[in-house]
Figure 1 (cartoon, rainbow, N blue to C red):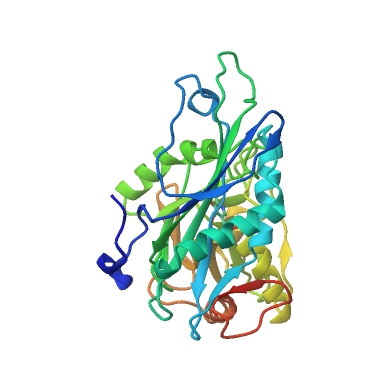
Figure 2 (cartoon, rainbow, N blue to C red; figure 1 turned 135 degrees about the vertical axis):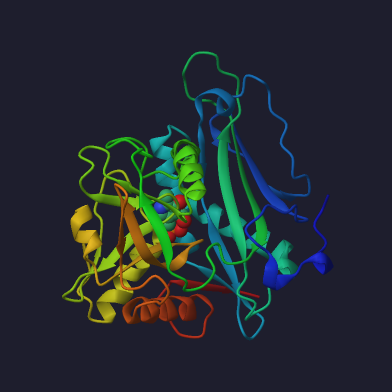
Length: 340
Ligand SMILES: Cc1ncc(COP(=O)(O)O)c(C=O)c1O
């Protein structure tokens, strides 16, 4: 059933699927992307032999539309999502969707569902979920030759509410292999993170912190966000790894941290080092910036900064990022695209 806008409680949206009036769809066949269009049907018809159902050719993205104080709508670096989507496609042997058409389609979906972009100051946003699947029939392990690209939108509350420190546990599992698909945004990485996250939640943790899959020595990332730490010397450090998602939030914070004199660097971070950070956080589109209150490893809890309060560096980075996203502050050139 379609979601009625009048039934939405903007302050308590949660992070759940809702069926909005319009989505965008384009199909790939005969070696090229066909013209796409807005459609109303939220379902997909698939053959039982469709590639996605057996060998997992799926990639996706996640980005948000922010309601500004003047009522207009901001998109935050959608061109970066378009680019990462193309990289993910390449890794999964799928035909890249043209990056300019990706951004154009995102805008069409936002405008078509405009009244679902939550009000300024509600703390909520319109989350956009572009994805692509292999649809043609295969039996042996091989890539599809037909694909469907879609973008749907859902109004969401903050995935992790505000600047509240959360407790994490170091996972004994890996979510991605060293030279596997960790840098791509593909469903398989998330499928392998489900059991670890179920177990983490059962034990009272917000999520898992994964280690590098080769040595289990260095910090990789969280199940749905990248990791950063602020060293005792006040430096912003974030893992360099072949098996983590190239986060757009992370890349943005590296620039903001530079401007704030935090001398940011991407490098390997040992777990021991992470325990000794002055501050640490999770960063991503859904998480925004969420402070790490503690990291538990082999039964021992390591508190970072505080379990109840957020450190000053994290607070300053959070405020600057969010102000840019909502258009309260001007960001570096090209970061924000405003649509009416
Ligand atoms: C595993 C993982 N790492 C990192 C991120 C952060 O990426 P981005 O900042 O582009 O949203 C995400 C998605 O939010 C993610 O799912």
